Image 1: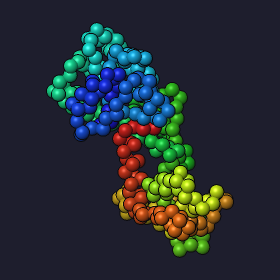
Image 2 (image 1 turned 90 degrees about the vertical axis):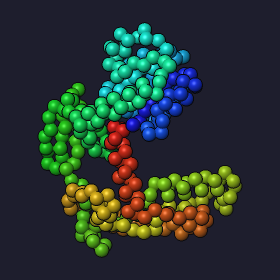
Image 3 (image 1 turned 135 degrees about the vertical axis):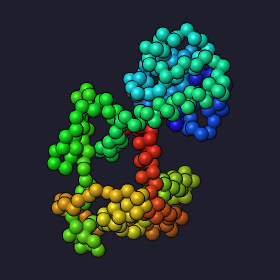
Image 4 (image 1 turned 45 degrees about the vertical axis):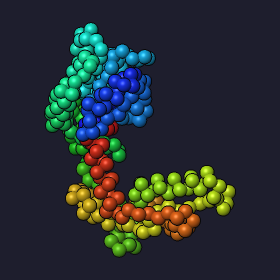
Length: 294
């Protein structure tokens, strides 16, 4: 599980992290404001939130209200030195209320119950892939589903509608390429990041040979769209639903990077092959689905 801990007492945060152990991924926040920043600006979501009530700045009660606004189905747990706030906790649909000091048994029982609840929630929701994002929609918020052409429309409560394509479209299979589809250069994001780190180090340490240097970053190998699809299916075991459609205006037939200068000057080279790149991207997408990130 992804667990957020929020307490302005460093020792209490440390103790909670220790009791939870390493089987779950925990993120500790020393203030409610910091937790809200992670949710509002970085769109982070957690399976379980453990909140202290008495904190400087925003209180645990107000923090819980804000989390409810951003993540209505979140599992919230108060961890407090006082049991005076049960009524307020009830109104906020708190999953559990623990009074400090917390024992290992209490944490174990909490995590076990939370996992069971999360599993139940996931059995009652659908994950939609739309416009490059994963959107989790609970069944009770889904009003109806209809089809328009090759697009599925999901009408939800509050007049919210999501659309997803039934099929991927491959634009053209009559180009002058081995399989007729366009050719591009696909690079693993980690390899790309490493190139940027090396380039920044070159600037910071005054290793530049010119005031402005230009490096092409890529694998140097062209891959067709159909080859990309076939490699994805091989790497992940997932069969893609796609169709061949007409050419798209403005598409270039063949284009890929020549990274020779970057290889020589930066001592950098793309290391990941296409199969590993696609497998990593798919695993990351699955992890986002598990976390319900939209």
